[in-house]
Length: 230
Image 1 (spheres, rainbow, N blue to C red):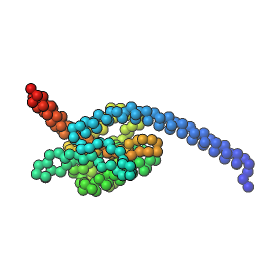
Image 2 (cartoon, one colour):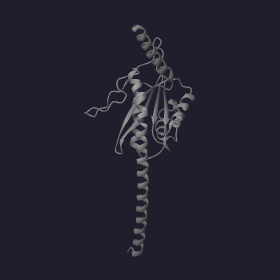
Image 3 (cartoon, rainbow, N blue to C red):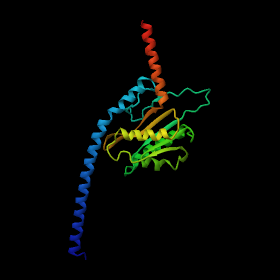
Image 4 (cartoon, rainbow, N blue to C red):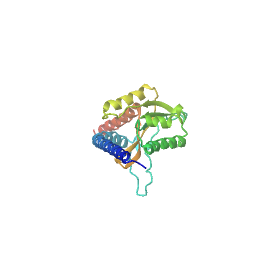
């Protein structure tokens, strides 16, 4: 028979656990609210580059396109390839995979890894022209076994505190210091909507020379148009 004293000790232990759990929920809710507020403040900084890509036709179509009514994935932006000499030059790509360093959101991270694997398979990716940049320990652990020859840079401890421009500078410097000259890059991440809804998104980015060439072309067209009006 279970003695009354043992039952009393057990109930006291359960109550203590409930108090600890309640405190942890309050702390998590506070952190989550803070992260949501910082996300809303940071999102406008991403609109400028996207509109630039669309207006300069670096990307054909809309960079961020929502799913259609049937729930199918929208067609990805068709990125213009750089000029190739007699077809012997392959387009060099970088896949920037953004996940967290830790956490129990397995489905969130594995979804990005599966998407990367599909892209590699469809593009017949090799180690020389397709490189991986992993932001977060989760993405590195999921992809390094399958694609060790494609790993270029791995960065962790990003986002532990409020993200600032210095964090982006660290990632950009790490990619530059790696010495890999790429033509096209793609950022794979989960776009947040609510605590129960997120969507895997892909945003392109380009090398410095590609952006400079587009700006130069735009300036030439503007100058030529102004000269024609005289």
